[in-house]
Image (tube, rainbow, N blue to C red):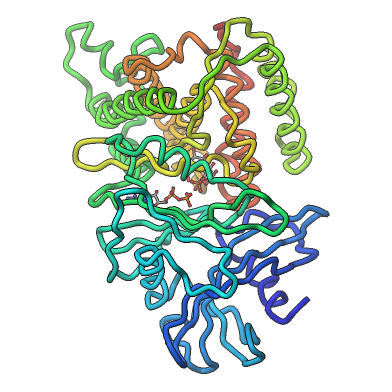
Length: 492
Ligand SMILES: Nc1ncnc2c1ncn2[C@@H]1O[C@H](COP(=O)(O)OP(=O)(O)O)[C@@H](O)[C@H]1O
Ligand SMILES: O=P(O)(O)O[C@H]1O[C@H](CO)[C@@H](O[C@H]2O[C@H](CO)[C@@H](O)[C@H](O)[C@H]2O)[C@H](O)[C@H]1O
């Protein structure tokens, strides 16, 4: 291993976006290295590295944006981004650091888009813009610090540049789907992308996506968790207050039907249920646009069986890593077997693929959908497969459970709190499904077997995701699986 590879081997596992956390790195190899920009003699340089990390006999590729400056010239505000001192090029020692924190360098990325030309050593990295786009330069890129699988830089109120961290050959679905949806009011307009050739692969990999920034928006996860917290803090755990049964989709409908004014709790539940319903409608609209712009098909029985097999495989993998999952496996397997036997034709199309509350932002008038990347740890060619839009519905339903379950993380057992949290999740799940069906999507209530299998599959994915990234949160998907496994499946 080179000096830089050794430094990266120690630094990578500490990064939020590194998907192989907790598994020893056996090998690190810098597969390619490109100098993108240099701000002049003695100034910082920006390198783009494609790094292969070997773990448990498997190799994964990551993108590292590396800054390099002469030793002892790192500004104090970048001290926390330092990776170490080594020779990057031409044998001279440099202090190397995570360049996404360096606003001097990130600003130069916009200039590469504007000129279409990086100052590159060998030219295999390309900055592309979409027809009709003139990139405005001048703003510095500020790194977002949220829970992310990638790294997003916000340039003033103009753009967001998302650098994909885990790289796969092929166009990233986030680029493909945003381009297909360009012009829709429900996505952020795509402006350009960065791509690079990967050694030995005929198709380039997408390294980053440049999109218009949606100003003044808040993401659905922040809104939902604030709402669920308010509900609970406001005494939502009073069991005598009306909570709509499953057949009543709107909170408060039961009391309304009885001529009673809405209870405080149902008003609080309703405040987010309206949002959930609108989100359901918006989701249906986006699915319709995707189906119009890109290929569609119908899932054949053979393909359904293959899909069920893939779910079984994922369950086996997750159970091997997280033994608590194994006790629920028989019921989960039953759900997958029921799915494989569904005999109605299931329309399939391109879908979001990793749909949850953190992927939607709400501005003044609408919900906007982000991050059509799919599950970042799944190879791009698999993420490009057509799928049932109900997979996205299941993803968002899981997310309502998450927002409620998150509230209980670290809390001592409290049946009232648990009851309120579950009530919140159920109300919003129902509102989302109602909005989705009203918006023209396949009615979730009529596809319960399919939905149950997709929800289990997503929760199993989440178990692995949490085990690798946020072990404290593991109980959120595990408890959902336990309670869904204990419930009798409703035919449909
Ligand atoms: N175009 C945009 N306008 C405003 N905020 C955005 C935009 N794109 C991303 N964001 C913010 O960045 C966060 C992470 O973006 P996302 O694409 O979901 O990244 P990741 O793939 O790493 O999860 C979003 O939750 C949102 O808050
Ligand atoms: O980074 P991405 O947004 O592409 O997605 C990954 O990270 C998500 C967490 O940030 C993870 O989502 C899970 O946690 C969310 C709350 O933080 C919750 O809303 C989702 O329902 C839950 O799946 C996602 O699964 C993962 O791919």
